[in-house]
Amino acid sequence: MAALLMIAWIYLRIGLMFVGGGYVLIPLLNHIMVEQYHWLTLRQFLDGLALSQLTPGPLAMLATFTGFRAGGFPGALVATVFIFLPCVVLMLLIGRNYHRLKNIDIIKNTLDGLLPAVVGLVAAAAWNLGASSLSGMQEFITLAVGFALFKWTKISPMFVILGAGVVGLLLN
Amino acid sequence: MQTESAKVSLTEIFLTFATIGLTGFGGGMAIVALVERICVREKKWISSDEFLHGLAFGQILGPFSLNVCTFTGHHLRGIRGGVIAAIGFLLPSFLLVSLLSWIYFTYHKLPQLQAALKGTNPVIIGLIVVVAFDMGRKQIKGINGVLMALAAFGATVFFTLNAAWVLLGAALWSFGRAYFQRRLN
Image (cartoon, rainbow over all chains, first blue to last red; front, side, top):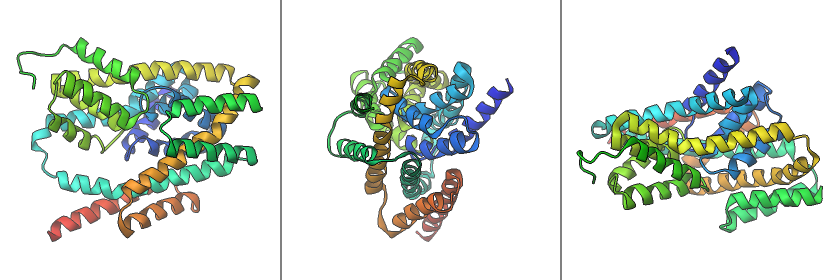
């Protein structure tokens, strides 16, 4: 029970910092799950990212995977509920006061101004994860091929990841 | 626009958003496009303008794919509608990811699964790099944006500062600028 309360509190805090789209969760969750609480190894964290990209729905389902690790199925449920609680409550409040919201400009300008920092954080996450998990020529070639496929083709990430899994199975 | 008298049932809201949640591969904008097609064009549950406003507000906190679902549900049936839409949208992914997590943590010592995941690992990092690239091209405008992105990158990589503090600092800075500009105009 105490463990579930702690999971709830941790994910609620992440939910409150959840700005600029799902990818900001990569640095946030990596820091908390891997470096702070050691609930996951770096490898497991990256595997979880791959799994949550294989399913429909937002990348934020990474919360379900990490919550599952922290506390089984109840942990997954609590993590998912609490990470999404702040944004659902906020959207309900906005829906209620939709016609009276006046300071839209200042909200919009603040958000626009904040986005470059999110970009910097995502780039830093790629750097940190890559620096601590990649080794050998083969992995860097896989990264480059993945980059090219995501960047210049319209193949769904799901198929690229599944394909990479098959290649990994054959090579190793 | 739907009239007040013809209320959409909560069951229909749930089933509609569960279908969206189940078929919404590709995340983010792909899901928003799906919601728009079903709720605005096919079912005419919400006007295009209001939907776009919901999308704009949806950028504030959390995934905007979830937020447009909550907003549309609320538009139809108030708080209950919004909550039902959010649950319906998340439930399929939640069950699927729970199942995959269970399989993963039970069998992750299997050499075959280890080998397959060793292949996906660098590709996932490649995906994050692409996201940083594309977001950067779209969101970084002018020297201020470049400096802020570099500062956030440097603070995390070289000074190992927690991402949450970086975000808080950037939010305060950005709010201050927006506030100051408004006072000038």
